[in-house]
Image (cartoon, rainbow, N blue to C red; front, side):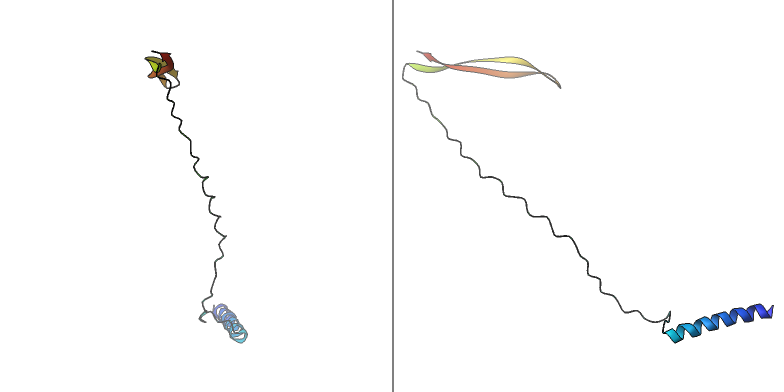
Length: 96
C-alpha cells in the first residue's frame, strides 16, 4: 500500500521539478494579450437617386367653338381578388 502512494508522490514531485526548471508555472500570472479585431470594410454607400425629371404640363386652349365633352360610368373589373366596381371616363372635343 505504501509503495503505491510513494510512487505517486515521486511522479508528482518529478513533474513539479521539471515544470520549475523549464519556467512553466501553472500559477504564473499571464500578461493580457491585445487582440485587434479586423472587420471587413463597410460596403460603399448606394449611388444617389437620379434627378427627378421635370414633366412639362401642356395647357390646351381650343377655339371658342370647341368644348370638352365627357361621359362617365361605372364598370365591373374582374380582378384576382374578386370583382370590383370602378369609375370610368371618356372625353372628347366637341363643337358647340
